[in-house]
Amino acid sequence: TPSSVAASSLALSNAAHPRLPPCDNCFRAWLPVLGFILCNTVMNVTTILFLQTAPAALLAAVSALRLPLGNVAFCMTAVMGDDAQEVRAADVAGLIVILVGVVVFRGAGAGRKSGR
Image (cartoon, rainbow, N blue to C red; front, top):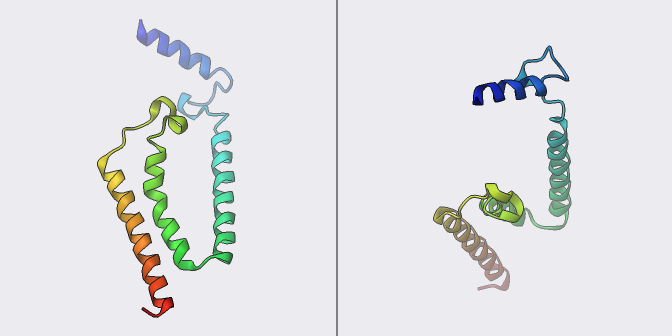
């Protein structure tokens, strides 16, 4: 029966640390946590280096692009595999609105510099 299979798999998964409840038996949980810490550290150092060479307004524009591009990444099977989500119209619309805003912002800044 399915319940006996689930019970036996819980017993097997809890064999390494029998005193822990099954939900707390995650001895390999440090791997994704370490991966997150490394990726976050690389992102923060890259942001600092980017800010040293580029204007703060460009950093704000790039930061605004993170969310819609992150949503697009969750739709890619290369990134998510079988768990990839469908592309929604709201994701595409958000990306377009932000890209248009960045282009207009940069164009307005270039127009002011040239004296228009």
